[in-house]
Image 1 (cartoon, rainbow, N blue to C red):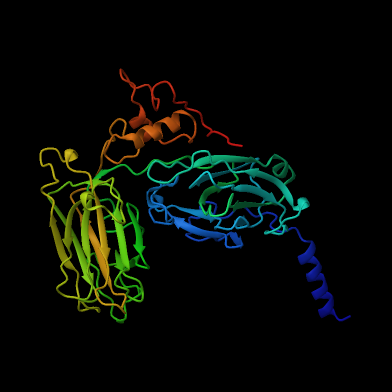
Image 2 (cartoon, one colour):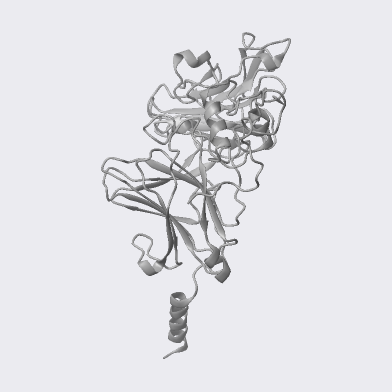
Length: 462
């Protein structure tokens, strides 16, 4: 046998016998790459696995866009869903890794109690769809005793014991499976912050309101302070001065107002330009710190309809009810086109009805909602937006009892406080302790009197 064939035989034997994944760590457990890199998605009989982002609509049932993810604005979670068939299963499996501690922690939230999610610890070479008994190291039910959607939904932290695998330095895969419990029960379970260090992040409170608009010129190079979504294929892109982006057909790019490597958001309908597709950008809650909202825009074509809406903080950010809209204004579009000869237009909206000159902190809390669709089917034209400014940005001190930072004291705050007090969610940042410490006579560092525990570990669920 020639040396070439011997080499091929040895390589084949190595691929069959070599330990898979030894030395690797768990990859992309928070899905922060905006992808399922490091994970394999499988489905059985119509099951579904996808990646979803906080602030977007991913269920036909209302409230999915209002769910606060545990790691804040712009965060992602994996969504597993069974469909109508009782045999339907969504399956998500990690690449092989060697646990870095004796605990595997993760956060989950189920849409309904009519689900049966499980976490399975597999050997590295296990069959991902139908593992044998010898390939399953552990299998446990995922706790979903607080299901729901909406602003008061809370992810639960759960822990799986990996003591044996950690001690043996044994490579494993972690797998999440969701079957239906009955025909027609096609509900989702969200999974995120899968962590094998034993020090998974704690729940992060929603972003507090601010004076002025956070990151109004997108100088951080991301959408911090904003959420992007769309309807029927509309979408939003963050684009940089001098860089090509979808829909920009001219070689000479449009100069951005701040020059250099400055940023803007590209809000547009679907690529096909369907007139009912809408791109949507929504800010975090803020209070105007000036009597005027100013911003800059440039539209690719005259046949677009960009608008600005000012919303109550409690409004549905995608399809607000008329009574939740404080103000609607059309964006001026006098000089559409593309290429270096075009510039952004200055825009302004009167906020005097919502601005408190004597004490800006007492102004009207709101969200800024930007939307655009085309008025003629066939072209996915864009409008660029940047330099949103409603006065100098300053953090607002949170006020007592406003646990979800929506500017109101209501049942949503009470539910969050009771869940913290009962240990159903993990420790939270000091700001949430500050607003939740409602002891009547003096602050005592407790969220709800006599219930807060300053433990360093979150509850363990089995």
